[in-house]
Length: 321
Image (cartoon, rainbow, N blue to C red; front, side):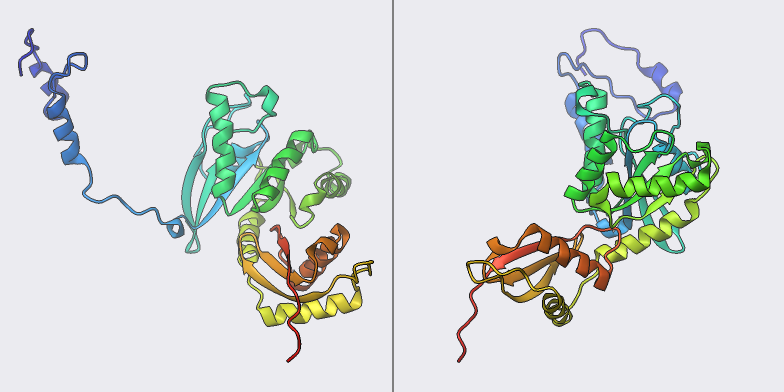
């Protein structure tokens, strides 16, 4: 080591942290030895990123100060994340893995998602971006809403992003213990949720208090149920028997082009479930008939808590031999 000024590094041995490495980052002195030390400590093989080890991934999302971190702590029965009355305490997505009855879960606490116009550049901006990415990698999302404030525009925007990403979702109305006339307000609030979040009509609504523990016992069982629903596959034969029946009961309206004809349908994906319908002319599929098919699909097969996607493709009927 050719330092111009010899450093007395022997005092550092008193710290009990092993052999110190004197360096000069400005002049690049002894950097090669530091890199050699680091290389020796690195693992020989990197662990594989196995999604199955994470179990069911649950993202807890919502506006700032709706009780997301309190809910995470209550579900884990421990103070895993910091809770504060000051909005914006959680800055990053925090993953916590846990087991219940041999079932594995990863619970993701996220930063509050503000309106874009109110998000400043810097830490808060990146916290929001990580919250959105947490939704992207989640299987089931718990959308937390403050019962004392009702459903506001930002709640609807977050819900819209969840639906757009095709994620399973459960609506959590938190701080329920702080509302007056709980019995009647529950009915009013559920009707409000169905009206304001009509595009999540398939999602169940749970009234909870992260502070008192009220209503928390059903959340994980509902997560399991939604996860199974979004992974459900319907056989092509079963699906086409259903299609023949629903088209017979409510035929598509006739048009000048000769009317819409369905040939067959098949399910091609899960998470979210995706169904492809082969028809003579996809342009003739009216949005009201799409809604009819989706409603009938849910009545027949469930799919509670998960969006479903309907795709219509053109195909000419083969001539009879």
